[in-house]
Image (cartoon, rainbow, N blue to C red; front, side):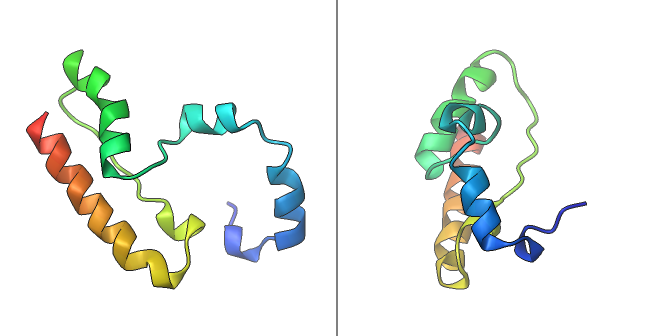
Length: 83
C-alpha cells in the first residue's frame, strides 16, 4: 500500500513530470462536476445503471479546498441522478 503523504515531495514532482497527462486522464476523471458528468454521460447513454465514485480530491488539494471539493461532489451526484 502507498500512502501519498508519506512519499518524498521532491521525488513525486520528478516522477510527475515523466507521466504523460493523457495517460493519467485516461484512468482518472478530473474536473468540476459538469466536466466529470460529461465524461460519464456516454456510459449512461450506453446503459450504465450503477457507478462507484472515489473522491480523490483530498490527495490533490489542501484542507482549505476541501469544502469546495465536497460541494462539487454533491453537484456531480445531482447530475448523475438526472442521467
